[in-house]
Length: 322
Image 1 (tube, rainbow, N blue to C red):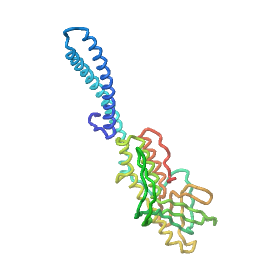
Image 2 (cartoon, rainbow, N blue to C red):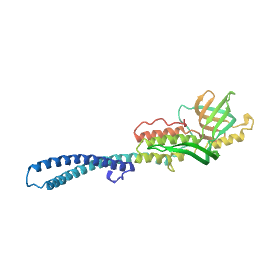
Image 3 (tube, rainbow, N blue to C red):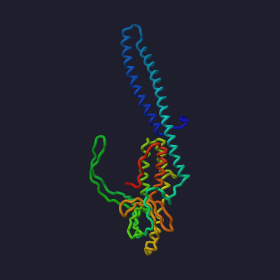
Image 4 (tube, rainbow, N blue to C red):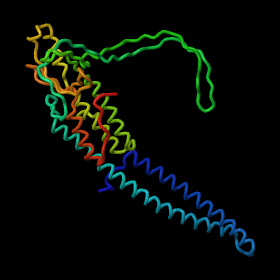
């Protein structure tokens, strides 16, 4: 079975480099041995008449070359056996990670329910104010000139002055906005609900999974499987993009001008940040159902599955980008 698994890019690189290292080491050893034997043979042959020195040295070189090839073939076999074993274990682990993607396909996450324990639940809130915050993308071009000088022996460095004009444009995110809801509680107190955009959640998780993949050797089956788990069409990133609390925010905007008592009730689950402020993980709006904002159930389940497949404890997955 192991022989039928192609070497990953990383395994091939490891094998080639180990063979090169061993070849160089063995070659150096045999060069030293040949040099010493040749010297000793020349001295001995000089003391014995009628024996062709070059012929003896040729036989000596042929014999030592044969020994070198024998040693090399033995070492090559050992290295290939070790690399094939490691490659097979790497391939097996990657297949276990791929099972998580298959699990996602068969069990798509429900982003309308949240059962994660320990979250604060607050019911019967009335929306008072809604503020949106977009993440702008800025692109620009520079037109001008540079005057300076270069220096450096092994690295080229420059210094000088740059002048010109920069033209740019800012493109706001229109479909996925971070939101702050100011709501009134039943007792008349006010509560600030902080609702991060899905884009921020995805960015935070992307960094986590990229770092996890990089903890394995680049080009290995496991590294590639972890990258694919995150970014392939049916992977984690695609699943997270289905989160859509924006529909509830838009509905609340349409109702915010109504008298307070006629506005829809809001229920939330979240994490208290400080007095009067809660980081929202789920929001439920009267007549509009519920929507996940931070999929803590989903994140926890994926982490549990990864630990099960990788056979090791993983650092906590951050809810938000720090």
